[in-house]
Image (tube, rainbow, N blue to C red):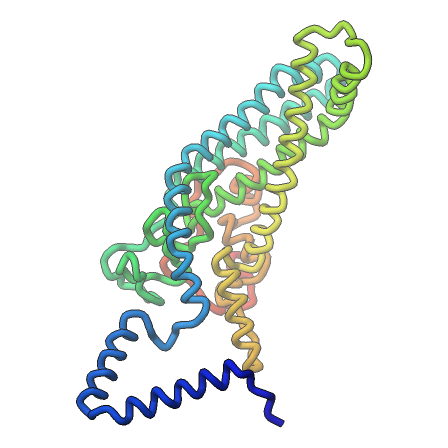
Length: 352
């Protein structure tokens, strides 16, 4: 049975029929000019790929443009915040925690805290500096002698596989993952490892401060709280600043550990699958499209979990897990970012 049509729908259909009949009664030359005018009008905005997503993206383009402009101009502010907040934690650690550790901890724990803390600090500083200063990689401006998958509509240059345009940097990026405002730089082929390592070691450092300073935080919190409920004890200004500094350090490091830890786990999952943040969305849509036709999508750049990590870190032999992963290293990533092996064999492509 046909569903009942609403009055508005019937009225709209009647108006369409009347307008069609009225056009048919016009002279042929008028109808041809009217059809030509309609064609010109539709050519300004219509194509066969137009859908709701294209229209919504067009309407939101001014907002995206403003976000790109603000992110570009405030990049140095975000970098300054990272440096300032990290420096504040270091000042508290050296002037408040280190004297306490040296006076109360046994020699074994003193050595462990000093060695681990400074190793973690060196890894954070090294990878953050390299992530901000290393170019993510750009495709050649002239037509390269390599296969390319498309042409960038904004740069008007050929785009190799895994290359995407960054609206903030206003250029194409090799194996682009995303634009990070905290680095004031794009994360691409040549600095992706530095970015992930910075996130990893910063998370470990924040977890270290949060766990090791938990008891001090509880004591400082109770001391501050008791000063408001009871007559203030004979605390000096130095004691008050010590307690407030401990509370500030614990809250900041705990918050960053949770937030940045979640981001690090997300990127670790992407690396295990051999894809970037952008490719994650593309592959998800492609998998849904092929699933409707009864097919299974396979990521052409997934070499297996272990191989993906070896390629990402540039591990070519067993000793590289120490010298290139657990110690600062400026080695170049695997490949040039322009050409990629697709659908590789299941064997270990980088044996160790």
